[in-house]
Length: 165
Image 1 (cartoon, rainbow, N blue to C red):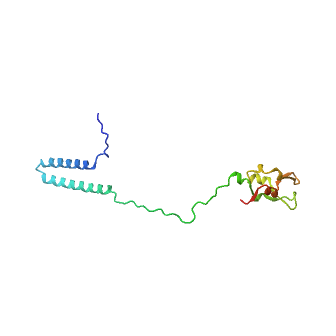
Image 2 (cartoon, one colour; image 1 turned 90 degrees about the vertical axis):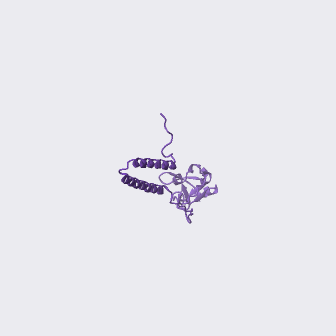
Image 3 (cartoon, one colour; image 1 turned 60 degrees about the vertical axis):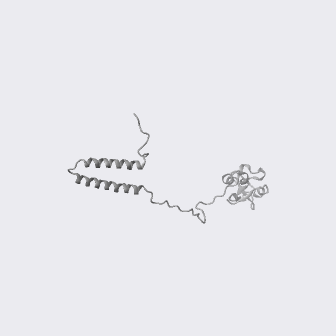
């Protein structure tokens, strides 16, 4: 059995029109053979063709692309962008020399006039506490247990900075 590979969408529009004309001609010739009701039949055929013509015109009008596509030029936004600017973090080899200023505290049991950087705070706020120089480390008794801190002046002499983050 032979099957056509063309779908109904592949048939060209002018062939559909020719098919419609041939079908209308066959219908009209069939009616002309019966002369008794020829006047009524001819009027019905003409009315039917008029209706088909109107429907065809409406379909064609709907298929036409009468609406031009509206394009608008790109308008750049002025002022601040919607997202906040987040600077790139410093690389680890540079950032490890910035110590948080919030860790500088006064420990009265260590000294009456000097501050230290607390080890517990550095562990939480600074990721490289284990790499701080041992020469700057100070251990003192606070009355209950030994505490460990780092001398800020010693750390500054070794290239560390105390920064607010």
